[in-house]
Length: 411
Image 1 (cartoon, helix red, strand yellow):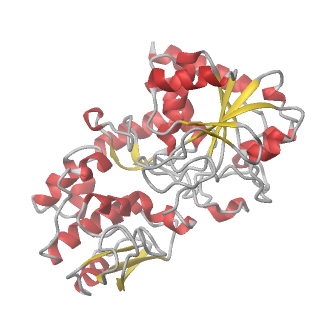
Image 2 (tube, rainbow, N blue to C red; image 1 turned 45 degrees about the vertical axis):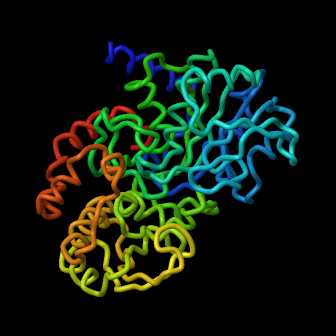
């Protein structure tokens, strides 16, 4: 059953996706174009005759920073009927854990529906009420399993299948590249909105590739899915190769540098240390009261590839330790290609626990939800070092990499 579904999905994708060759197949370097740019270049032919709704947020912009909703709404070739906003909202007015609710967009007059924390039949009912035929998805991801937009993608695909809607994904770059997947794989009993299905912590995929994976592996009823691929993107590319403006996908993701470290240092959300929220360098600055330069020294002794650690002091303006000066480290990545954010995150947890007597996990064991199992927490508590913890997920990661390979669009 699984193999036949993959065969059918592959055939559907081959006919539905724009057929421009990838950069990897070309002799020379070609400028990158997003899925939206390729869709627009063909005068929105894939949306012809359809009543369209779009799931997007402030990252859905063109190279000249116009929002694609504004562009599509003004184009006579697109019958745009609705917008669906994720966490933080369509226009991005809400902080973490918030959304904008239901309203009419002042710029276009379009109805905006809230998808945040909706899934299954309730979300299918939203799609039905909107009156659209096709749901389009265009949101910039950052490459980490616990970044919620990819689960908005999953939930919307599931709901579109329930509502009998067609689903089109406009691809954008994975800003930290896509050479491989790293980190532990989620165990199903730890499924939450920061990880619905068993994928690796740093998945190394684009949103269109994830959509194919979700459709082929996890959705009980696959959705009629089409992908509009990028052109010119290579799996070794970081975000600056795209030439695209960086629009923060969420308030605490201000730069591509943040995205580079996020899949590792976000693990500090599961501890009593600050993960840098409330500073100008969230997820690059980590610390707590009572931490001194010993942590940076211990982290540097690990010899982690591509990164160095600086003793740092900061006072978060909100979140943990608001208004209080704390000590800790700042990550300085000097070799992006060699840097492994997940291994680095584990190394920092191991050394933080060893050098700071006040170290503690969050009482709700949030770390288990972020890492996808009890493995990381229990091994570190038992005194395991970085290599031992990383070795603990080797087999499940290898299995995920084999599955992942079947859905890669860019090689």
